[in-house]
Length: 202
Image 1 (cartoon, one colour):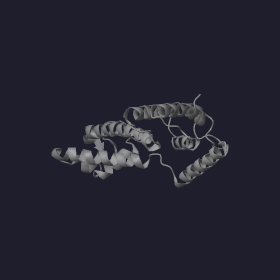
Image 2 (cartoon, rainbow, N blue to C red):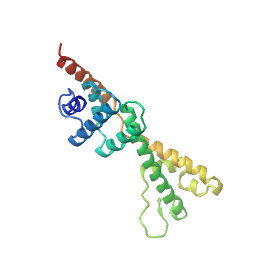
Image 3 (cartoon, one colour):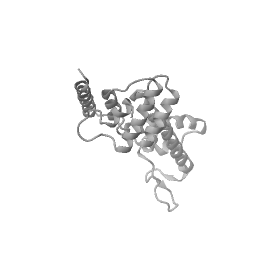
Image 4 (spheres, rainbow, N blue to C red):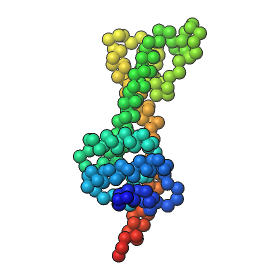
């Protein structure tokens, strides 16, 4: 086991329960080892702690996808921000696909929608369940009635408004480090640095 992998698998000087599960920790160790070899970089305990804590909420699948993309595209050692950016790009693609599906659902059934009840008029079908993001985007477009009365030549413009507001609404729900989590991360990194310094031979 080389130094890079040993640093990650040893716990990186962070006390208490590890913020990542065993599979994610193993995956991260593998990729830090690969990055270290490929970019000729040694990963210190403190740096490994940063990666481990900041990427704690990613699944194994997300780590694998993002790290592989970084390996293919990054000219220099990928940072935490680089890895998270690859995840956000994949999430953005998924968001656009979901927005497209809900826009199609909306426009294909618009003539049947009871604007007050938000359900299909006179069909006996249950109400159409739009996501919270779609509901916010519909409101930004003027509601069901506003969309219904939009002239065909303006529908492409309205669709862009829908897509933009859908993405904004999804972004509000995205995971973000709170101020408390950021403080905890910095404290853990500081402790990891102290532990690593104390363990170095004098």
